[in-house]
Image 1 (tube, rainbow, N blue to C red):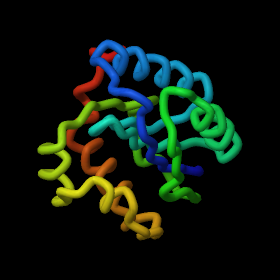
Image 2 (image 1 turned 90 degrees about the vertical axis):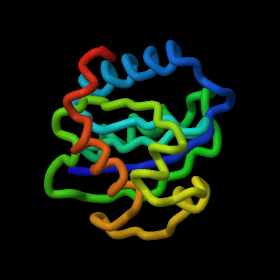
Image 3 (image 1 turned 60 degrees about the horizontal axis):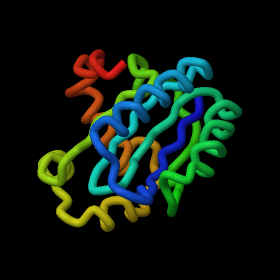
Amino acid sequence: MYYLIYVSQATRPFTTDELKELARMCYQNNIDRDITGMLVYLENKFLQVLEGTKEEVQGLFSSISQDPRHKKVSVLIEGEISQRNFPKWSMGFKAVDKQLFQDLTGFENLEEFFNRSDVDNESHLSLIFLKLFYRKNYRDFADLY
């Protein structure tokens, strides 16, 4: 099993309806490829984790990185894992406000959080944040699809 986490900057603010449509599109694309993961939208930034076969994840990421709705696409961490961290989500999605992010991570500075250089599969801050969020919310997203 392979995973990839990236961060990017939205080219413009997204409305709630646009975010829901994006989540639905991600969900369908991921089901077709047997990819699981999560997408977070925070302060015009996207943080996404994709899990699946290396071929499928890298292929999907290649398409994602060309999407004109965002820029400054940067891979934070990628590698092999023994099992999926987000097995029940073809694509979990949440727009997170700055206060919730600060409460969950302890970070006030988003740039500092996203630019951390921890590269261990278990201790990378972005993966810890996403896994914690998943564990607390994986049952709350049925209404998006």
